[in-house]
Length: 112
Length: 112
Image 1 (cartoon, rainbow over the protein chains, first blue to last red):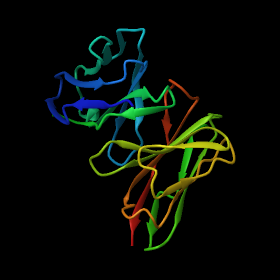
Image 2 (image 1 turned 90 degrees about the vertical axis):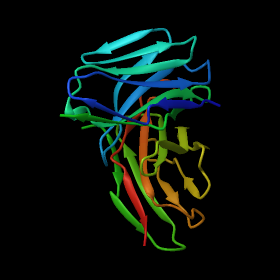
Image 3 (image 1 turned 120 degrees about the vertical axis):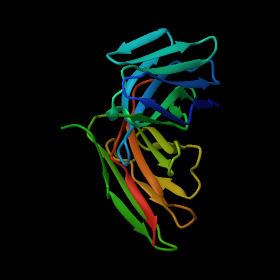
């Protein structure tokens, strides 16, 4: 089955700097890769996603890149703000498209 | 206002007791999911259902049971066989396949 690894597990950046979180997946058949943001005690919320027929997608300060050959995808946050502080999860569609496999999460802290 | 409603927000279980967590959605989604989240950990899949009257075990189904008698409802029962039930439980739904999952606000279960 699918396996998703995520690095780093924690990340601290100064306000205004960029943050990059990387995920690798094992199943070459996976074709959909969402990113979720979870604030403390709250529900995970989708922030951006990418499909395997696209190499990069951008939404304001957030971008995701996908390298199908290497089987990894990355979340890029530019001009970080304190409200970006949260846990970020990547996921890949697995099990013949029936369910997601989530990475273990990255705790991002943006220091003022 | 469409969304996913989980209840209760907090739940306490006594030894040897079964408890049921409610999950209702009015998004007209076919697929529904239950995840367990332990402190500082990622999301682990308990059960999922792609269609009414059908469901499949996820990675950690032991000690849990579900039913899917209606499209909008997917209750999770934590049985007495689950020896370590203390966790944050999240319900999600989606159109199905490689589409975003939408999460409820979660239920926090503790042992008395």
